[in-house]
Each structure stands twice: as C-alpha cells, then as structure tokens.
Length: 252
Image (cartoon, rainbow, N blue to C red; front, side, top):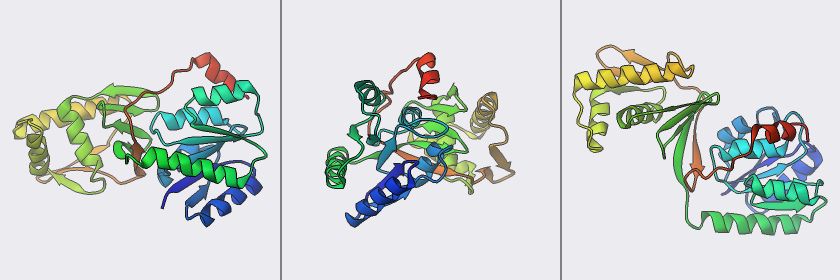
C-alpha cells in the first residue's frame, strides 16, 4: 500500500482528498504541524506528497526544496495560484505535477496513479539516514546538521552508519571491525579507537555532541530518538536557488 502525505492548510480539501484516495487503497496522512512539514515527512515516509503552495509559516516552494534535499519522492502541487510563474517555479523546484484548484478528484487520482507507476516500477532504495535532525547521506558519506556539512572518511562513514542502523543498541567493537573488514578496511582494535575519536570530533564540529557513547569493555551506543530512513531513487541532483529568491519564497 502506497503512502501519501497531504500538505494542505484547508482541512476541508485535505480531508476530502485523503478520504477519496483511501477509497483507492492508498494510506494517507494530512499534515498536522505546518511548521514542521519535513519532520512529518520523515516520520511518515510517504511514497508521494501532495503539496499546496499557499501555506502558513513557509510556503510550498520552501517545503518542496527541503524535501528535495533528502528525497526524490514524486511531489504534486495543488494550488489556486495557477499563473505561469508559479507553475514554472514549481516545476523548477522539483515538482512532478501541478494541478489547479478547483480540481476533479478523478483527475487527481489518475495523475497520482501515473506518477506512482512511473516512479516505483523500478523500485526504491534507502540511501539516507536521519537522526535527531542530522542526515547521513549514504551516497557520498556526507553528514548534514543544521545546514552544516562534514565529509567523513570511509571508515568514519561505515562506523556511523552501523551505529545509526542500530540506534538504542550496543554494537560491539568486534561487530564494527567485522563490518569494516567486509569493505576491505582491515582495522585492528587501536585503529578502531582512533577512527571513533576522529568521528566524534567531526560530529562535535557541527554541533552534535555526546552522540556516540562508549560502553566500556563492550562497544558503542547511539541513543534512540527520531530515527528515520528516507527513500530516494537517484543520487543528489538537487536544484539550486539563490538565497535572495528563497527569501522571497517565504512571503509568497
């Protein structure tokens, strides 16, 4: 069952769309906190997003850009702002479809079905992990937190990936070394200690303190809180928009 996130401040429209799509055996969720759309996206892990342009706090263009930073799920814009500028802007920001309000629910359903069919006929793969607002990109070994980025070495990346895949669980040093060996990184006990120390320093450099805890004589632990996997189908080809334009987006 495909999951669809509906980001719409008009609850009548949001609930109508949700109920209609559920009749077609889709699992839907309407956004509850329009200040934190990205967090709801990460928590729900939808295969498609229906997004209004005119939203309180931040508009749809802003949230489209935020979603595109972590995912390539198809995005459908719903908006009464149907002038050519908005349509072009939506498509340039990474939208896959633009539907003008008022719209026919049958047409909306047909477009949703077509997008899902085209998108997921090839399947999806997980290539990012989110932890407490930080994103570990599994494609390029870059960790992003509060708009700061840090590049990890191969060993640092593998260690952090293993720990985030087992959040809330103690991962033994032997298990970590075995995983590193699988990737042709032959490390001994002392080398592992050095790599973990360097990894901690890189985490601290972007404001992530006390993330990795040592369990003496056993291994390492990352506490569980808000861990989500994000589905993407392609490597980052994210659109660039200047900061000046983004400042305008917030007030559209």
